[in-house]
Length: 116
View 1 (tube, rainbow, N blue to C red):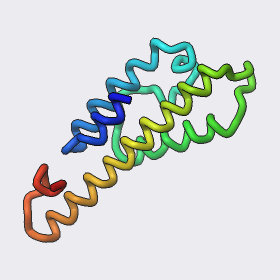
View 2 (view 1 turned 60 degrees about the vertical axis):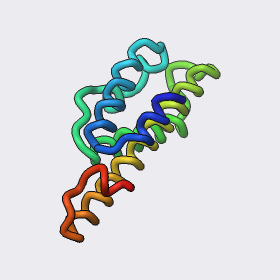
View 3 (view 1 turned 90 degrees about the horizontal axis):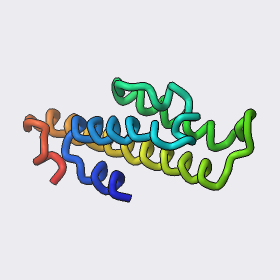
View 4 (view 1 turned 60 degrees about the horizontal axis):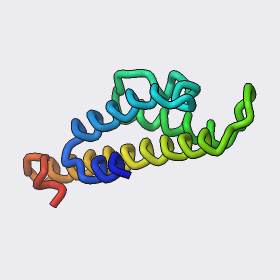
């Protein structure tokens, strides 16, 4: 999936947030996306803790069947996609944060060089 590749190749948290914001904004065009919790689809994205909370919300939605309707295969597919996108973004953000902290600890300026 292109969005996953783009997020994985991001060299800054700003890139990850930008790509994730675009993805979340696009969810409004899917009927399943419209049924996701506002806690998942609300913009703007805030910070790492916000992304973690959204990941947990999506994971809980995956485990709990919808009370108002029986999920279709497309509902399940979109929910799995959303979980994967948020999970990859969260992992990238944590890795970028780790590399930035390591660079600072070593007296270097954090940035793209910290990822190579």
